[in-house]
Image (cartoon, rainbow, N blue to C red; front, side, top):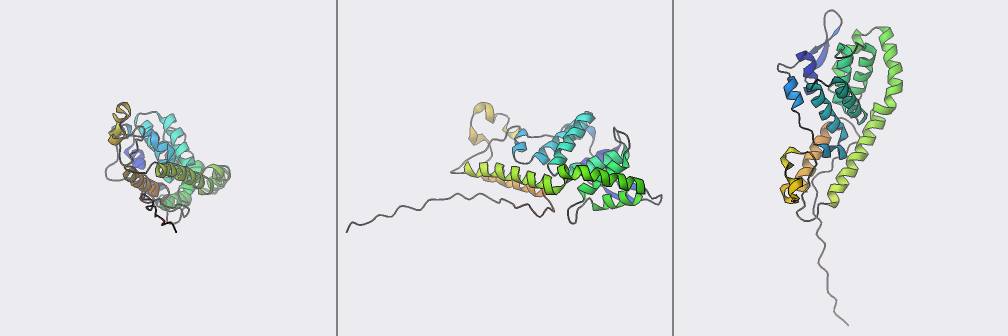
Length: 246
């Protein structure tokens, strides 16, 4: 399998126009191997907060296991939850014909979606792909985008993902009284916590909140609609005051 294609999962690529006029991905000096991808750990509980991150993780894992149809399905699901890395990878796969026919119009549509946010790190890839595309491919890409935007563009996907994230974090906030802990299903460090039934073996809720908020900052990077949650603060009720009878 091409190291160039594997490099897309770490998102170290930028596409540059070669002298021939074709877009050429520049891979990082070290790309992940199939084994690295297959060993990716995905916590199913994250789906309640950040499905974009969770399904991207499943797609990466599936790709490393050579389940390419399943990987593409999970990348598309992640893309529908506003994962710009997933949209980028789908574009690169279509551009290079990675386990599918080459489809430069589809590649251009995916890369356009990946690069839609201001100062996107995927802008160079889209610009180079667009420059190398024929007028026919550009027109086909626009037709594809018209059908893809209602599902994958930030106006729909990021807003939906933000609502899911807010709901999940609201649940954490309700659980955050005292010294609460949160057991996220599938988190490898909590393998025995569920069987033991001891929440104290799970991370403290403030630590979980911080980790999720950092992950959300990556998912929503560059999207103006995202508001970070920040550390949860324990609310202490004021002591009751006594009244002297007249």
